[in-house]
Image (cartoon, rainbow, N blue to C red; front, side, top):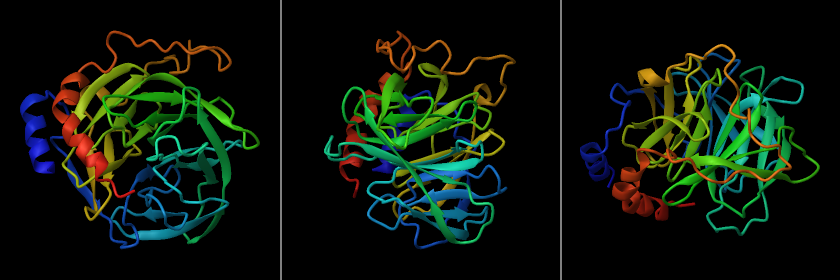
Length: 322
């Protein structure tokens, strides 16, 4: 199926990027069976964090550039119902932190809320237990299945991209998260079809949302840079930027244990303009209705992808084991 899909997409889609992709490393740890999220470390050069999808121990794995697991961190105060992503950010004191997204909902709204766990990024690569702070979320427009979490490094704002047939939506969390009450996610833009993960560039100048076969790069919500192809994977799930912001790392669930390095196209390389505003600039306050209308250019270039890839994506989605 993957080979057929790749051939079809290559024949009809003018996708950029991905042509110089190379295998960065292969995951060596047999305990990593479903690499559902990736996050490049902000304090340990060469370290990438990953985790399994669901129904396992609440653990994250610190993997080095050779694919070896350097440490396993058990997350206290957390359950692994359906972990779908991990993103680097900061805690309330500005210290490096990791946000782990228990946001999958294959039961179409059966869960009354979803949860994101925050832990301080470890200062040493030594296996131990990390204490989590839990944040509960609901969506302002009803329950959604989602697999993508993004943290804007400029203001530490959390975003979630829903996973939907045709096109998903990008949701924004409140500026300040509360661990005492439920936080509401509000739509601020569209998202890549069948989004399986997302990430912000280290400098915050762009972000990416991937699907099974391709990824869309953005400057801001609904400000698309380009649609790019990705290497064929068994079940493409996770994505993160390299620390220099010039490439993407992607992984797959299942037996495909390769982590690919995919160079960014020229137009998406980090080149932040002085004084460029944050994606949040000019948006309505959290207590005001969001403008849910989409601009004429929303998801430009994705229409053909949807027509050609929809059936294949639907089949892949239905075959997910979790």
